[in-house]
Image 1 (cartoon, protein in one colour):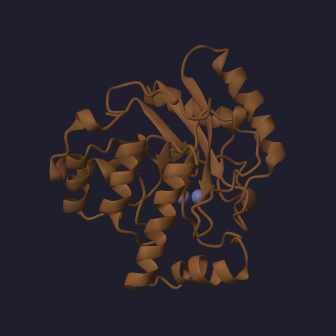
Image 2 (spheres, rainbow, N blue to C red):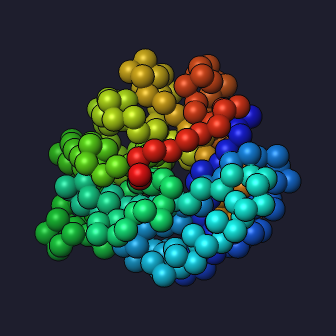
Length: 248
Ligand SMILES: [Zn+2]
Ligand SMILES: [Zn+2]
């Protein structure tokens, strides 16, 4: 059983991509008996689903208000986009002091750095290319993001963008970045997840809910954990409270 769910989208993601106000999600989490939740709407550079920066300030106020109820601890994050070969995320220049934690992942339909890099980095992922050169470039971007961008969690690794999971995992272990087992799709091979565990990677299980009904829904990653017998000690939100310290 997880005590916290830290990948939850709200109505603040762009374009009607997700539903549910922060209050509705809070109520759903309370009903489930969760002790911690985190909001993580899509990063600014997503062409469709990117969150408006102004809405994040509004969300901060809402989060502080929810926390004043002293029931569930609410964290405010974002699911930022790794948008270029250099491994930058779309929080460049944004004052991160309003965030409690940062998730980073790759998504299709995100504004690239420029046309040439977009063709090299974003476009092959849209086409689902899996050749060695593409995987090498993607892996390098993820590792650079881990090393340089103060990330707490990598979301749905190997989904939407193919990488060398083990190489990314080594960097994640070194830099204390959590690898997510995502509630909608676990796209890493069983043996790779077990190898990550041997390398010292810590995991987090999240729903990736896009509506209040799916908050805390982690059946898919849970069945993976059971099947491969992953040690639950290595899952940071498994009957444990999570703390984040990278944004401070
Ligand atoms: Zn989404
Ligand atoms: Zn995502």
